[in-house]
Length: 358
Image 1 (spheres, rainbow, N blue to C red):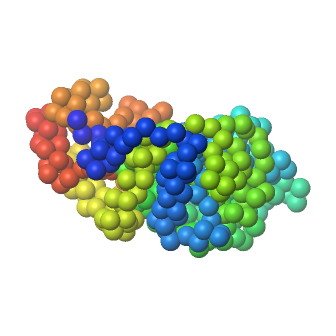
Image 2: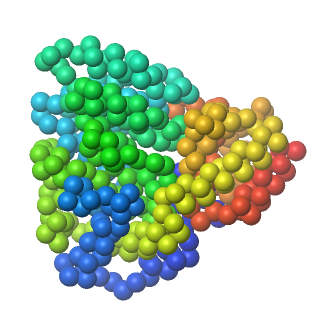
């Protein structure tokens, strides 16, 4: 079965075999060697200076990494503006509400880009006692496949002094992130999407200066404690050791294949193949290609074809696709080209689509 959903991904044989390594106690030096190499390789994906940045690992899904980032990096007197245009932006707001973090939300139609002018106006209109300490945003909003413009948001943050927190869960490893932007403070990401690892381990890449000031609102996901203990070759809890094995091998494979630029090119070619093939069958894209990520694209359900019918017919042919979310559940479906997917695989997918639509 080929997974064309936005994570978990179909694994390469190299990564799958790595899961069969010997049992390993997480209090032994061999585990800390494993942890150290993963952290170093995560930073190496963007050639980051380990004196400035740190990669903090945790056994959690990508949402766990986002929660850890937000809960730790917004101070008690902080205030967050959440720019949102989909389910995952809403999730950041729900996390803030859960921890009683002062926050405001700005967004609009899920099928529209964020409005930098409106965000700028909201930031500028904040009174002296209610300035925004942070702006939070989802880089790749998987709800629709939209890639949000971090460059413009970084400009707004630098002008106002706010710090930028990024949910990079489904973009990290494929789409460009500008870690040279001085407003960018942290990025939350995960193993089982563009890095092609397995579910169970996620991470936050964060400026050391920021994590040194982290607050402790949560126990298990306490980013500051995780960072301190990992720097000391330690861990507060039992990690998902097999998932760590898988992430390390995935990172080695990622580097051997040419890193982020090569992965972006590969995804872009596969996404274009699917888009063109479906267009030839009369299936419309929901967003223009230039506004979409290369990771995932959304498409309009053909008239008269229910998602359940489409999903089940494709699954019978060996492919798993993804439904729309929330208010878009009845109008779109999504296809991701992450993981061990080839052009030949997608030719077969398009043949299945053609048979179904006939």
